[in-house]
Image (cartoon, rainbow, N blue to C red; front, side):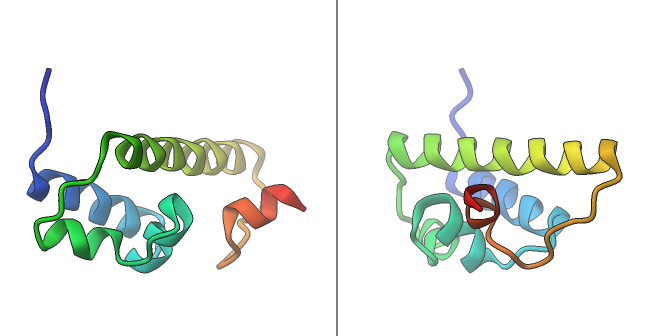
Length: 88
């Protein structure tokens, strides 16, 4: 089993943010409620397993939604919070 380093986690999250045109603070806020998540990992914080699971679930949710929009030709929701959009 490969356990990612802090640098690998940060790189993975930064790439996700670039692909989805998302600010790092938005990513942290929507994934965990912590806007400074990526910055704190970059600074050496070791996220808990629970946090890593929440982030992985969030990333999968966003990818699934993007895939569905691409397949259906749906318009994206712009800067709206994905969780708010789904709750509506």
